[in-house]
Amino acid sequence: MITGSASLGVALRGSEGSSSPTPATPEAPSPPPSPAGTPSPCVLAVDGSYAARLARRGGSRHAERWTLDGPEPYAVPLPTDRPEEPGTEVLPLTDGRVLVHRAERELPGARHTFSLLYPTGPGTGELALGSVECAEPGTVLRLLPPSPAGTRAYALAAGPDSTAVWLIAGGDFGPEHLAEVPGHCSGGVWLDTTGRMLALDRTRDGRTKTVVVDLERGGEMSPLLQIAEDSDDRLLLADADSGLLLIRSDAPSPGRERLGWGVLGSTLPVRFPECLRVEGCEVTPFAIQPGQILTPEGCAVALRVDGAGGSWLGLWRPAERRLQHVPAPEGWLPGTGRWTRGGELHLPCATPAAPCSVARLTAPAAQPASSAPSAALAQPVAEASQRRNASPSAEGGDGPAPGPGSDAHEGAAAPSETAGPATRPVPLQQAPLGVTRPRESPRPPLREGESEPFAGGLLRAARHVVVAAAVTDGR
Image (cartoon, rainbow, N blue to C red):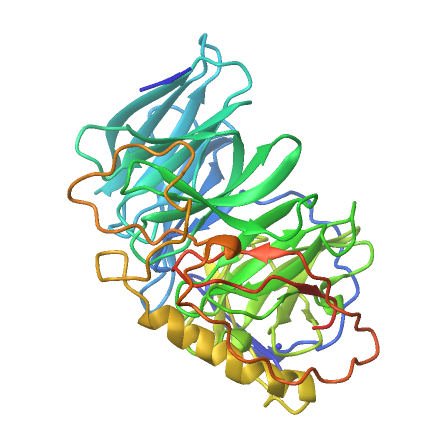
């Protein structure tokens, strides 16, 4: 029970000065030496204006806010009257305040408290928001990634059989319970630019599938990602501009998870590129280049590569067939960074000499599609993006009528009178009769390393547009 990049350049800019761009190795670097200590995780605000992390000061931990939207980044310590525990979470809002989540585990029922910190001259102001109590054993409460609505913050309380979504900051009366989703949920990816559609990886009956929860319709839930009946499918990242989705699934190789990509609103297959398989390493995407409205296959993607000797960067585009390995800048806070629309990757770094700095890495320009498979992909992907952006927005508009049975949603509550029509997924079997599949281009001959796509997978779109149903090993 719950209450309450070919040629790459890296430039480092920070509070202690800057260094000239230095060339980075385009191929896989030797693993860096193991760091002396693991830096605290760093969280970026949704617009990249601020960052927050736990920093050590005088032997204790405290919250620290980084300002990143000025000419030079700088850090502001936010100490309170007590040191922060190792499990404390921080999340920056776009107005400059930092949300702090503390778990009081010594109390029965795991009480979680939330406060907003902000600088007040020489001291720190603290606004208590309230608390959430998780009485059910095994319930884990954590903050969700920053919401597209930059001054709002959400949390997920995942129990063994049910998961609650909470609005923590930005509401009227402190923490507010928004939705209850049957099953144990993990992940958390925002699908739109308003903070309404939340994708969660739900585990039930031993299988994990991604569902989407409409937070403006009482938590109305619909399936989003199902590649095969017996596969575990998780959504890792999504870009609302292009519709690019990054997926981890064991569908192409049962028992072994692989990275794949798809396009929300496309009829193309989900693809699992061989280049994203790095032997002996774990590869995790953490940033997608925004603003690529009609060319999701041209989005630059930044990935964290973890090997036996440390972590480094991987750069990749869906239209290309190779992963570029790049040494991580000194002091990089692993797994943290964001792309600009122009293709520059900003990576927060902290070293003794420059405790608050940002390394800027420019990705190489996307290569024009020259191969037959790439040329065959370009037009359908662009058409899918045009259909996505021409579809009704989350705030209104007439969309195609849902097919039979599409009104049944688990965990749905009565819709609010003020909420607009939900942009929920339409399962492939229930797609409106008026939606026709575009004529397929002739299939190009298989290249070395490619295999025939298998049918039966299902990726569902959250914009009334059916997404492709197959998996291929090609790109």
